[in-house]
Image 1 (cartoon, rainbow, N blue to C red):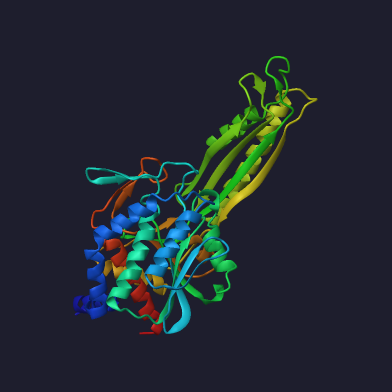
Image 2 (cartoon, rainbow, N blue to C red):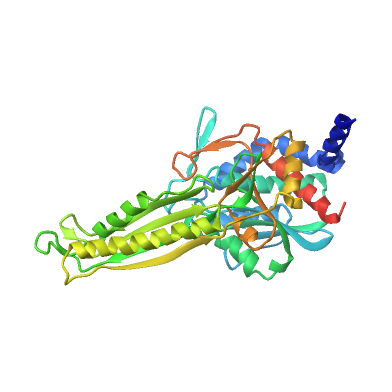
Length: 413
């Protein structure tokens, strides 16, 4: 009797709506369309990837996405004051679910974005991150049109700026904090990465600092003894490199960029470096931030003390990125919808933490998840970034099912 009761309870806990969704004629038609248009979606992904879109320079790609939104019949298509591309698909009510993918790539202006194909892989900067997300989003709009799918809530499709690097999530930050319709936004899904089984429910907190050290400079021989900003930076970075951080909660640090000096035989007048601090725990992030402050103070003092008392270095720190930590609860309807969609696709969900556009709504208490666009990828944020379109259609299919599952929950069914 106990075994039978346990089996009944386990069955009752499974998402009941997944099979119902897959048996709906409009959903079946949309899902079939996504699979049959797999090659066209890949071609769209490649075309998008070859349009340069460095952070703060996404304009050309934005114009292309706006033209695609109009082609697909989205309403009130615009490029907002922040640079985001917006397109609306009306529901029965104005309450809105946002589906987004980011325009920018993690490379400076001038990088060669030409995509090349080698046997089974495609290579190109930003090809997976996040051109795949943008192409998957377009595919979902087209599939909903093809199937004639209607939703209870309105859906806002967004190709947003500023996800990478020092963009500091400024596109989605504007959307949720300053846009004129911010109070209508109820849930948020970002398509970023490729693995469709991965559901990012937690936002890894990120703080990034630019540290600037300045001094009098001078000739390396004639003025030897004056403090050097570069030497001070070395002292500071050495202290950072010895920091002990916990594995759980996962916490990391990195000095990712350093510049300064004018010549090999000149004492530098300035040295600048940028530091990336991350943790899934806001309290731990605050503590390693304090360690950075202490390292800058001590490293500067050590260099000053070792050199001429008449000349002193100055240090300045600027917070250039601040992504809030947080988590969408596993019991939230949006997370349950994503898990139900994965189950319907035969996937076992993996709930994870990462730093994505979802950090912003999560930080505001708005349910948000980040999901994969399908296929396989590797070497993100490098010139050797690659993409393999293995069962790629399952990405947009899973996201579409998540949207519809969440939409059904919003009706109260």
